Amino acid sequence: MIGFILVFSTFKSYNIIIVGENHTDELDHKKQLEVIKDYYKYDKKIIIAMEMFQQPFQEYLDKYIQGEVDLNQLIEKTEYNKRWGFDINLYKDILEFARENKIKVVALNIPSELLSEIRKKGLENIDSAYLPKPIPKHTPEEIKFIDEAIKEHKNIKNKQAFYDIQLAWDYGMAYKIYDTYKKYPDYKIIVLIGKGHANTVKRFLNILDSSLKIFVYD
Image 1: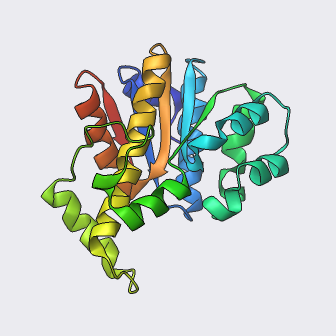
Image 2: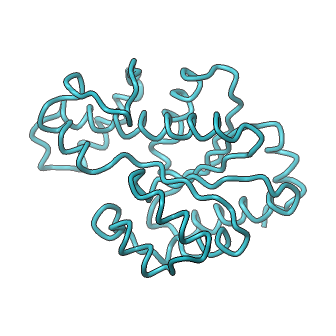
Image 3: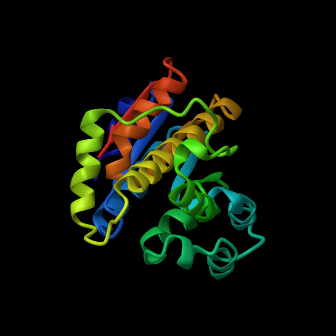
């Protein structure tokens, strides 16, 4: 266990805490829950932001937290299995803790329909409220990281489309975190996203607001 005094003293000066994960790693999800629980012991003003849910379905996360729908209904209403697909039990304890304590959970991901449109038209031809302009670019180092990911996808036919989708994914989440912080500046935002997104999202957040203090805990 990390120990809640250490968690609080480490993170209290930051606006945003990004806790990265490998999506199927149970230990990563236990670590995320541990950070949330231990920080919450000292400060109740937290928001959990999750990559696993797409932004158009925020109302159902709100209803889940308020006890108006159960977990099975949340899965159905957010189209979780189609749009994310990893075993919900990996996130069940996190969601239940948020519900028990009425902690707001924010859907971070941009909709699949927008990603499909980007794949067809190219990011430069897209205007979307989920991706306010100007859209930042990936650095050469980040592109190298994406190139390594491409090697694991043998059926990639359009590398530029893959780059565009990754950029939209990273920036779309970063902007949603930023927008949430603007609405709730007195809250600590604990962000649960894939480790491959964490540092890029942090950089994009600092492009959006250089004063933001962000800790990447992976």
